[in-house]
Length: 508
Image (cartoon, rainbow, N blue to C red; front, side, top):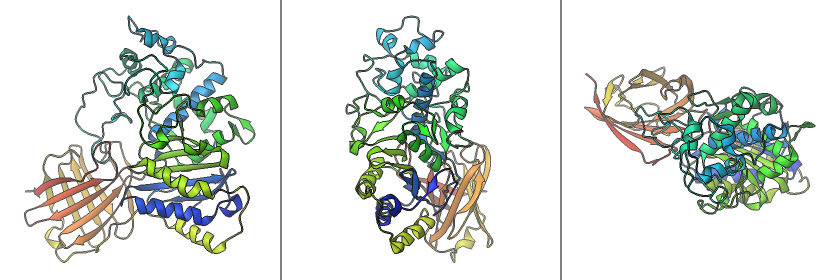
């Protein structure tokens, strides 16, 4: 098994009361359900404080940080717990107390009644998410994570509007219900928790947490997205590794203790992870209706979790003394939990199991060779010389791509994407994920991996993976004598994941 650090001790499943075959069954069940790039990226299973199984699907790996989306919220909640322990605030403090300069001239009674605990429990009284959900990572993304070049209409919502003072926007919105009476998942509420930490300490949330949480847990180099004024977003945007998530879950499982050091109070752990809000009013899936705590979801089987879009999980199983950390890019998050409850949870026994070298060896080999599916086909086509190095001008499209060139040189294949900012070459491997860096998404240079193959004499497929985020995509080039038809299919997307078809003509 891949081993990324000595932060957590390693063991094997049988020694900690889990059969290796159960872990294999879990992996097989996940892989049978998911689509080519709609898949898990990595996981780490802990029992009795020891790592019993860990694996990453290449090109993802143990050392790569991963976007957490709303799993970030559980870390923000922990910051409030730390601030409460330091005497900086109480959860029953009015929200308006912290923002006198941003309070509306005539605040409503519901706004005046809003407390910090309502922000924590997603019970602020707002009828809908104040960020309008599509702005969960405060970027409006297009098809597979490329940042859209158009300005979205966000008037009246917290993220991305014309007013860079997001707290003021939040406080200006109608609070339709009495706080505490209506659950709605509200990323803007978590942002307000981050803003409160900054109001109290003069520090961004990330800086506040660094010596209090991240450094004690051995979480090195965390990054967190910020608003236009430099405040940590709080409700999304944290990037850390899979093992870092596992350590965080183990801290909660241990009631706030870490290596004999008290990080969070036991009282806070109990308060944060119990069902404070009834979330059955707006949710449908069974593990989203069991109750909501302070930025933690209750689960079936008396478990709880932090989670984020597309399958970022920190699942804590107190009765089983287990933690499961997952990074993924999946469309159906409930299915992942279903597989956990079906295969892993019932396999956890109260005592060690007999050693089974054969099955454990099979598990070890499986974990060492996990990979996202490579493009299937041939390395060359008898017709590829017709299209070698030709540039194509693309019709207007929601990826904001203007042109494409594929160079089928013998030593390497290069896919070059062109947009308004320039050209973005990406090296493409055959039978392997070729890694590199690109700025095609507009975030600066970031890691990318690509593989390709000819699936027909006139059709070339490229699979593209941004392996520090959730986004992957399949590009299918259908070449014709005068142009091409390009189909682009994302693994996940805020909207439809249906493949888009873009026509192109030969340049010149």
